Length: 254
Image (cartoon, rainbow, N blue to C red; front, side, top):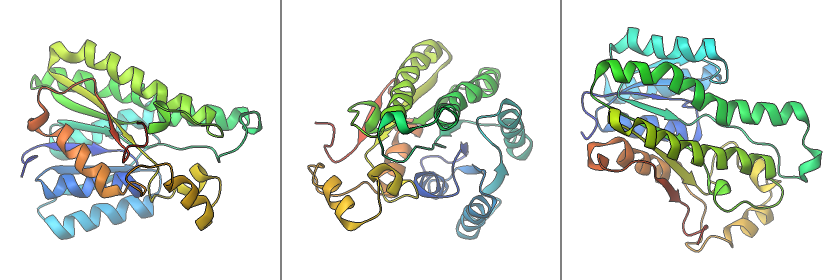
């Protein structure tokens, strides 16, 4: 029960890494606000958490995290439901299909940066004043990627968005340290999530095996791998850890 008594918001919590993080946090005693734009997925995850943990352990709140008004409603909704917030996981993210950089259109580029980068700015605008008022510090976890550390061809603009996440995570950690607000990033290698075919440029076994061959530990990441890393960073065990970009990648970035 490493997160007992704490409230966590997980964006993009309706599938993939976000779903696993939300469920892992609930197992360790946290109350969850599951956020997504996919009502079906978000509602399902919240209900499954409640079914497993009980006692109103989770609620689903729809919000487009790239929109200021939606982010404000998400933070306010969490406070209305539970009265306090200790943990924010900025996990929502999108990518473009693996292809030459000049084939990615402007609208697609803008959306990638809005969801992957601007959302973190918006969450800080609305959440940091709450954490400061509560006066107990807090933990912010941003989902970045190995793509932000070791960029490869075909995902140039996505790589750049995740590089921005890593850099702003470190800047936030330095600025918010005096408030006891810890800010860290997760850098997973590609995993079995709905975005995988886009990362690989296809869904065939050949695409998969070519990528797996570049990971020293010989497999893709799993949602559980990422959830366990997020749990550590959110827990009091990591109370002296901030500004870290934690590679959950089986050695991909070596």
